[in-house]
Image: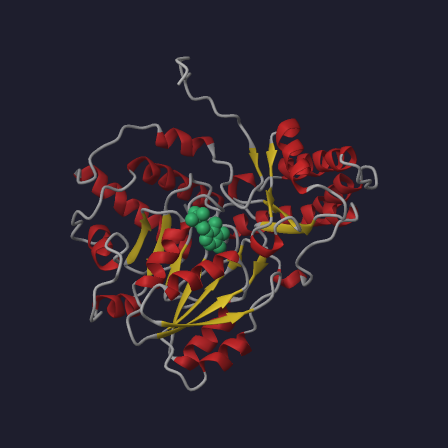
Length: 404
Ligand SMILES: *Cc1c(COP(=O)(O)O)cnc(C)c1O
């Protein structure tokens, strides 16, 4: 060990155009720098109720059990899947990328029987395949990712709800990549268990998973014959801490909850509809730019594209890492590469929450052109930025913010 002093922390201020984490509003940082109180302090308990009210508004639900789970998005998958499944149960998991695959892997660690209903990367899972897979079986749970971040595919929740109704199954939906960036309406869409992540379109720091559980699922969880395998993710006890009783379960990440509270206030000040529209418009401009540069989107069908993350194919002969490293070193911009089978084949550009800004789209397209040129890939000069500017000039004005 050398004995040089380790200096005070001073992170670079990056432009985060990844599929999470996204940039954070300065208001959220300020909230997180306020004093820690005890997690059983009456003041803190009132503040927890405020966070729950804000979360219900963002999820669009009246579910009593609505709270931020102390875990990243993957912990949300774990809690959502482990709790309703017991020995003898059967579930169907729609797999079309790394995160829905993760849900299937987690489900396979429960004593339940898991059937995977698959689609190729870049495509949605066909609801007809789900229907066929469940035919004649007693299916307890159908699980899917609303936005599959690894491939930038969006799936239509209503189609899977219909199949779940026919099969009498609970519908579990991963909205980590979509909540607060893409329309999600838990009560109207009758999602039984829905969870998200704080670091994507909500634009709070990573580390929490907002979750909502309807009365039907709560009854199933409270009526389990056996204990959920995980103590930490046992929703029965977690629900008691976030419920009226406020019974101690674990010490929650207090500063993260402060940050989440402020981030949710930002979401509702802007208004959900306005926020969805902002995400849609910025992605439209980004797509116009990418296509004008002669690059190819990974998801062919425009209706299947996830508005918060855009995947594009890496052109032949271009080095994935060199491009991403130069974007970071020269422009402070971080984008992501592919995961799993599409590693080295695609780039993923996230425009989530506070990162989904016109300035960022134009900066990225300009920087991207320069970096591609430096890496030996010619693109038509100024075409990307030009097409994005054109796209913005044709966009409707974003509606003003709604209820707080
Ligand atoms: C990011 C993401 C996750 C995982 O979240 P972590 O916070 O990295 O654990 C799960 N599902 C989807 C759809 C995601 O985009």
